[in-house]
Image (cartoon, rainbow, N blue to C red):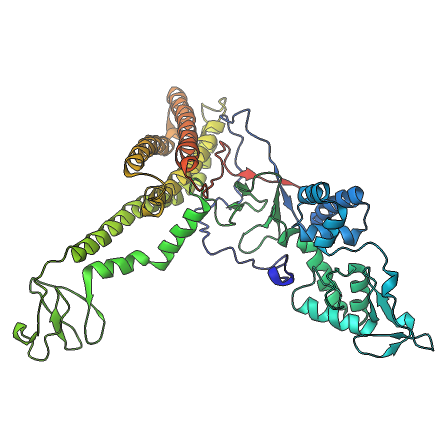
Length: 532
């Protein structure tokens, strides 16, 4: 791992820059506690993710350090150096130790635990030590020797450490000696820097602590804006959707908003397409032509193919040839736009096809996203309905079915919304080399049949929950309850089957296997437990 590969600038309390694609209206980061689901499946995995706060960060780091210290019988700073080199992957450290041996493990990470007497510094007749950096004779008590055996004066060491900390390389500061890859003892760095620059020493300590998050593939900052100061640690597969204590739900793999069943690569492409308005440029390409004089886009109005630009130039709409000042067809020299070329027609039709295909999927994605925003507003109305039911004739009934139905609707609407960007790329030209035309048609029909069945029942559930059942008779409330329970169970199963279709029949069949999605959970994004 290169020293400058990871910046030290991000830390607790800062804006970590993950707010590019997150839409608060679509996220459930409003502190609304999700109830226990009646349809929760008993085989759902318990939470395997944890929230790391400022207070628990040291404990989380200490736990991994202790494992390495116990196994290899090394000091604290040696264990930290090993873990930073292997990105805080304890299993990786153990694997390399078993397969390659202790000596190779230490050498690769820049750890030296043996004393090197052959590197003893040169002493003058007065007993002073010659510093090979500044070439001065320094009293021995003003020099420092690192684990590798290299000894220099404290002033040279201090200046070296200050430069490295300011450059953002404080996690792996190497010895100053030529071609020495040993990582310096963090305790000695701290003591030397603290003497003259206590503020930098404090910054150095903070960077070492936060290395557990910055260098760790299984830990990510919560991308909430403003930043809540928490991080999330997962124990197993990183392809999952997690929820922080602050209520933020996000994809652990790419740190953007939760977007399953759309893969991270597909979601990144989709957001780039939407934000860059590339299809608007495509529309301009199809419906306008550049003026040969000022190059501005000109849209054709009327039936005449002689088009007039505001700059005063007149040109042929068919081929773009300028007509000159006479504004007549006679002034066009060697006019050949009447000749038919299949390439021109092919390009035009292809551009239109891509445009309308994008519009189709974007409209459906946007429609379900807008429906989700509107349905989130149902929360207050739902609680008002529950309040009325609790004081009415239905007070004896368990009313959790209302909230459970609402959250089933939320989860399903989100999945349905993101299934359209997935379909856009899964069955588009981006993956055309992965399937034959016949295979693509069969798989697309299979997917769309399940998607449409899922969509129809999501709409039914939405309609039932919007009914004014707070004013119904007790029998009618019971009937509505059964409708909501049945539809919730049905929608949950259909959503699960859609995920299984995507994972097994679609993404699982891709040759390169570069697309992964977070597995479906009936309870929604996995809520991280607090790290004690």
